[in-house]
Image (tube, rainbow, N blue to C red):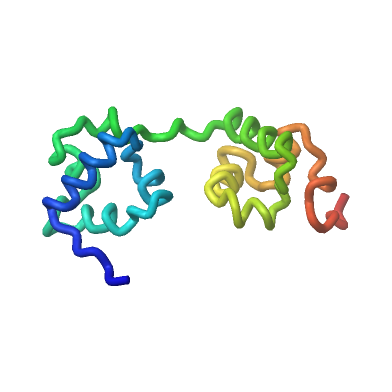
Length: 138
């Protein structure tokens, strides 16, 4: 399948069509839907230079149609870990590294928990029970 050639007109039309269909124009949602190439093209200097400029060129208010996720706080990280655990999801380091990369990244930041183990334990979960390989240090 040949790659689509994105132009200012095709990007504007696609943005308007997606908006009319009720889709969020947040870049993470568009990538999930398979529009990563369009988003990347919008960043080109010869097109729009940014995704925000592309959305605005389509006649839409960026903050209304492309909402950003809330900031990852310690409480939000804990809540997400607890949610995954209650859904019987594998929250071992290996699984989270594959399925929830950003959650792992923000949990490991020094200003948050510093490690995945510390985040899981802060969520009230015994890390050795969810880890694939029990830690020899505990």
